[in-house]
Length: 195
Image (tube, rainbow, N blue to C red; front, side):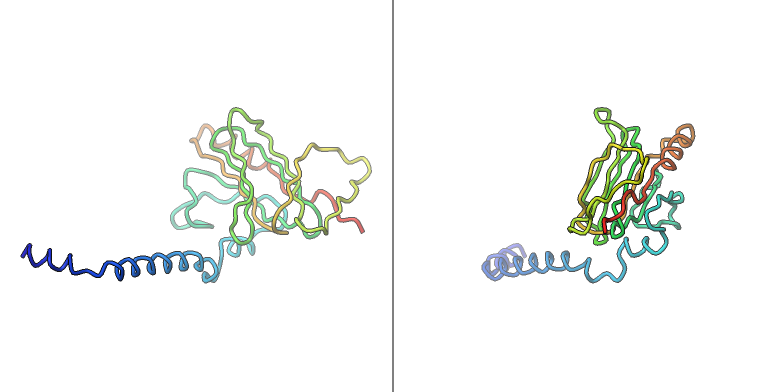
């Protein structure tokens, strides 16, 4: 039996086997890259219809039978904003007070193009002015008496997307503070285009 098995192994056409493995690898890579284009509804598509534009919303608690998106962690709370910069820049502010808090920006294609992670070495306040990547935004003038806010300007690769804040749920004692910080987060138009 062992001789027969050894004879079968030594009779394998090695170049043909290597070509088959190489072809399988190429097929796997192509299938992986094509999958996002073949899925009928993206995460952005699922969320965009239910979210108001440029307004931060707190998502309900993640449960096995109630998940707005797959793979959201049940030990965290989420606030989300569908932003759109076609009518002007969008101001995004949030507090990331403790380690584990994350602010992430996603394009409609699902690309994560910005992430801010809370850490003891960084200021907990995040203030970003989202401007479109094309030349249609001219800055616009602020209204008379408008307060000047120190914001970092971020040129974004798409005119719209999703801003997601993740707050770890550390238990009942910490939950009111986490919810208060999520409610304070804002996502709104800041300036209008110049005519």
